Image 1 (cartoon, one colour):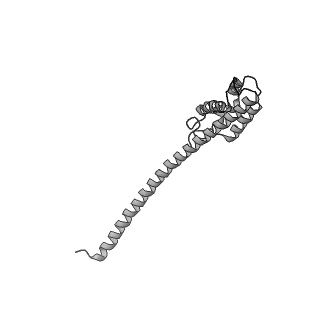
Image 2: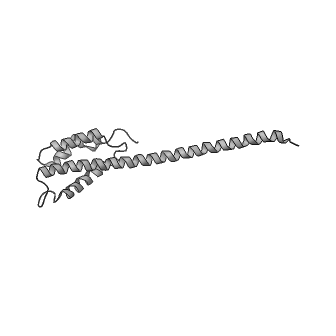
Image 3: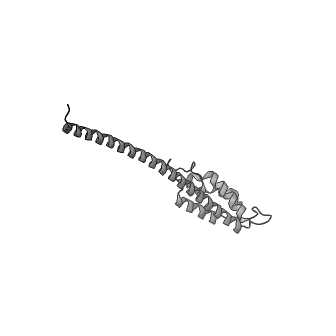
Length: 146
């Protein structure tokens, strides 16, 4: 017959090993869940940054269009709202979480907006397309992934 004095330490050791293994598994599960949550948050942050950048560029382009008298009835844009909608949509196609997985370069975005503000009133569509500062390849942060 096995004495109870010897069984208790062996049982305690077994319980301790099982508990430790369970804690490690729980920690690993939490770490995986945290990483997925962080990736989702980063993706949402990038999407928000891209949307904000698209709106800032659209606002700058439309300020320029207004200053060049291209907004109003019988003009290039019927209203400021249609102008913003068009240009925000155009930029959103170019600046998004897929195209810019690391986000938007805020300093470059500021340079882009400044270059739009400084542009003249001649052929604004083609001028904007040629602005080096406003290309998606310049506005997106370098590298891949968050």
